[in-house]
Length: 210
Image 1 (cartoon, rainbow, N blue to C red):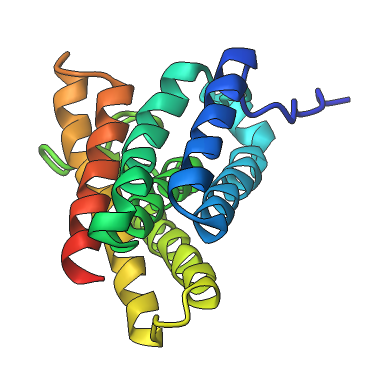
Image 2 (image 1 turned 180 degrees about the horizontal axis):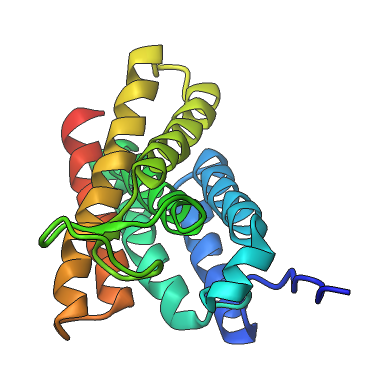
């Protein structure tokens, strides 16, 4: 009988840091900001567990993440929440869209056909940083759209066009993550810095277009 998937998403240190960040987001942002953060966490659990057996066979299943991963994904959205009274909600929504889209791309893209490197467009091993699949890019856009739809329900000023823009911001953040991942494969930076850059792109794009 196959091993049962571990449902844990964060270790204790990661859970503690996520709780602190969530409290900061709520205090300086709003309940809507916190709901978006919960949406990211919920979607992360779903896409991480999806295709568990295949990911396990490939040796790329991550059932428990540490505080470093929480910091890399959550620092920029938290800063955006703190600054939201001055800069508005666009940067926060954009950063959440980017990290959600990237999560969809990385967790679902590995289940599709063999990926290709953005460096030379040659096929590479699944799980390689800086590699993409067409399905993964579609999944990343879907992840961004989901954040856009939830934002549409939370923020009355948003239009359906804004939902599409949020989806595109998510896709862009995921693509930037893959581009930076090429450098990661060359020993420059790591997964944490790559994730942080992805969220920074989302924040800047959200600030400019939302």
